[in-house]
Length: 541
Image (cartoon, rainbow, N blue to C red; front, side, top):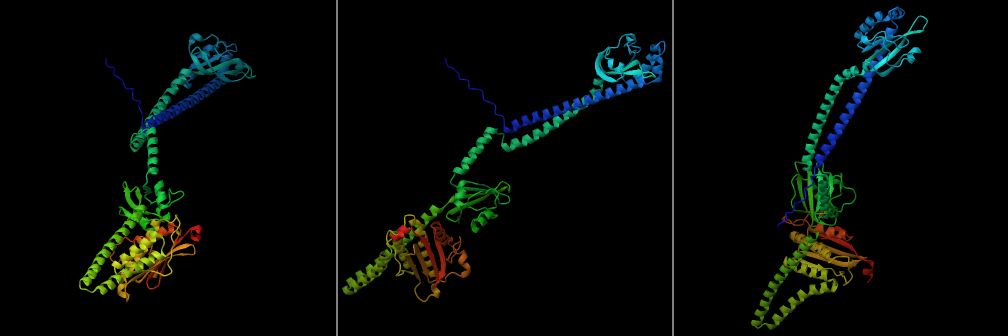
């Protein structure tokens, strides 16, 4: 026999807007009900006070009437006072007017059969000459009544007068205001409920019908996602102020402290980066440099002009690898050119041997070998650091292929092991490689104004605890007004406009990252000098 498993009933999860709607309706209903009760109690109290004042006035007026005093002293008070009391009762709207003797025996009453019977209520204070009110249940039911004395000319109590209004009459008077109050309360509740419904309908649309727990989880997921992704994210409002900046963006941009509410152009970011962020046209995969990193920038508009989303990807490692790949590619091209040139020279040697000119063949081969070995020996002898030596040899071959003579100055010397482990070889390649590349480009561009072969001179040595790298060329040099722009993204020595202008910017960035400096000078052409501090113990070694 198969057993069917009945799933547990799903718990109804009310949305945040629904819960707020219920709470607000309850609050509005409670406020309206409380106000209605207070208004009713206030109205009832005022009505009772008015009734008490009314019966007091009627009782005093009857007691002070001369005809009443005269009738009390007459042989048949009831015959005179009953018509008078009833007329006054009808005219004033009270429920009863009772005139009685000092023993409490009635002379008048709205019900004639009650005449001659004892008054129901307290008369002691009236016999003492005082006027007081009370709520007491008499022959007509519960009533608010007043008992006051009738005084003769000698100020002696000769009779008593009681006037009253039944509680039922007071309630009848309250029925109209109470119905109006109930109508006002119902209208207030309806208006409040409608307003609450409309407000919560809008809230439900904005929260997509989610409950508090779902919103809390969504916020936690949102925060975890923002702070765990490696891409930087910055959200700006309409006025270009920071609304959100995740951890990756802080690290990529080198930002510290409180950022929310600050304008993006007041964060100390590079001008080119700020201009791209604030530009009207969205940016797609645009490379920019910060103080220590290369970032790929993307921007997009949020909604219908609510603000702007800025995403950043770290391109530093990729840019360094790209630079190394370019160097390897250049080396490969230079080696290919050298191989082609060597083949040509080998053909020349073979041809001389075939012609029987053996001595000339030996002299030609020896001279070419000595020329090729001279720079290699000079670089290897002066630069013991393998990375810099290999870079120099490769750049020399590349420069020679382009018709530029690259030389190493006589005072250049870097022994193996001098450079500390904290100075990355990748940064050395970035600095020296880009300096040489820009110098070669500048020398070629200024070849028309230079009488001889374009030259690039490199100095690499330890100077006062710093690694000094100086590259000079025979180009046109750098104009004084352009010195501040040399290390900005987009500046380039290339005349064809195809360069990205990142080379010298990367040099400045690598120098800053390692605590160094970059200087721009001028001799025959441009002279760029980079100083990178070394560890003291490494220098002393």
